[in-house]
Length: 414
Image (cartoon, rainbow, N blue to C red; front, side, top):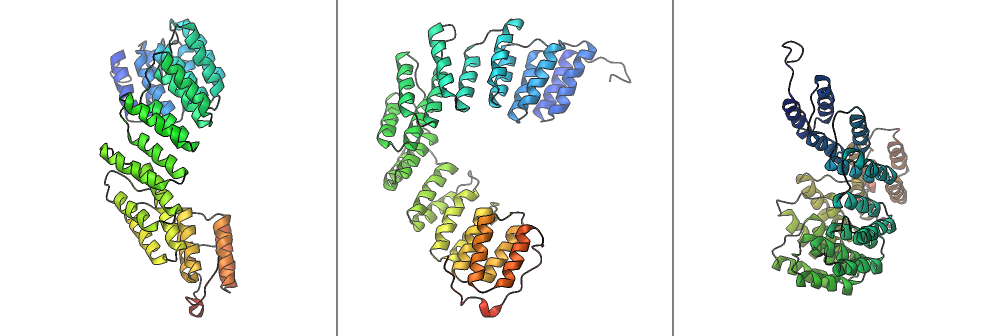
């Protein structure tokens, strides 16, 4: 269009094509198009630049986004608006460069922009996520004192979350009370943060009190609410109470997610309630909307192997692989040691080969535990081969010869 016909695209055309590239994930192409627009004297509206910067940051390219932003405004390609600054400030906060974030806030006035509540929320949230919750709380207090940009539920919840993650529940409760006194209404996220914090602090009485507050204030509980309560009870060893909350979740017509299943299955396995854990695993497998994850299967496989039910563990692994969920380092380690405990050293060696062949590198714990078992079984030649494979000096495709006389009659104590 430009080289052969001499046609000069207008700003709308540039914006449309750049936006299409952005939406398709072709971010570098979008950068090139928006940069070229100035060569044709076309001035693109800020939203096209903002969308691209936002997606760059979401893809983990915050530093690229900031560099482009500063280059574009220096070259006069576009005049940023308040949203532009909020997007970039969010990016620098995400990488922990709060000094840069404050410098960008100061520059807003150069372009006729002023920091708004969203700007301050980004700063407060960034500080709290970076474990600088005291600075985040100071900024909240300044907003309360100045009265220009009043804090909202997001501002308060960010500080409450920061204190909860630091285990400072008294400070979190103090901010919650300040929030109520200011007339700011807590939402479900606020209560979820507090319930989760109290659960991790093993204070289920306070967690339940917050749950009741949530109901009284007509905030709808969600899967995070119930998962946090279940997790708290499980941490306290009160598994029957956790099961009661599981049933209550169903009464609210809320479906558990993959993490809810993970919490309950892990806790059942810790208490050696393998039959119930298998029941929940079967229920999970029937859910078409949940993609099974390896970390859910591993504790079930582990408890079966420790109970000598190696064949049952193998069936779980087969079922897991059929669902497209691949064993990881921990799965293989559990199975290898499980087979060793049953005296099935050749089967354990086959699993070790499979582990390496699938690109899952064994760590020192796996190798040392396995070697200990093989030595106790009186198979030193296999030990040499295992060490060579683990060090990368031999191929896993070089199978270790089996010794029929040493197969199933050797019991190994680990």
